[in-house]
Length: 225
Image (cartoon, rainbow, N blue to C red; front, side):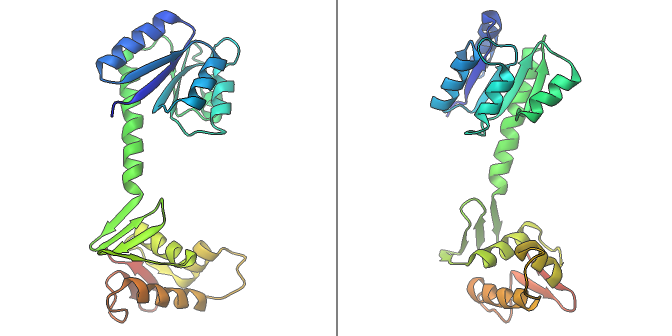
């Protein structure tokens, strides 16, 4: 599917030039010419990225960005004539993902867009952990071993995800208790041992000879990928 971009700028020549260049790269481009129109389109459209000018009629780019962040994580690149460092910091504080000062090179704009799409793609890939027969979907918190879905409690899942995201890193029982249950949890480290045992009973073919959740005797637990 082609990426859908919204350009928000009251300078029609800039919109025209950006639209032409992005469409040459196979993207679908829409435009808004003031802050209120931009906010309405972002609410009702399904955009992959927004190029947002700061100096706009009706609502500033800062105001648009701040409002958008209340309902959407769509990537936003600020495009503005303001090149001051504080303007950049302010834009990023309001939730922008990147910032470019005018005049800009359209090739650099496209490079920044592609960099954001690469980052998003990598983040999506990182939400799925695969190790041999095990698949952990970090977004849906579902775990499969082979063709079988494993029903884990919340704490069992939290333990498994933490270990699997950091393969071969040995966590002490105290580390796991703090990370999963928090510093105010009134129980002791035996809680970790109980949950590790139950986790192994669910995900391991032979819990007494685990493939995934391993013990480093006298130290703690780790994930073998």
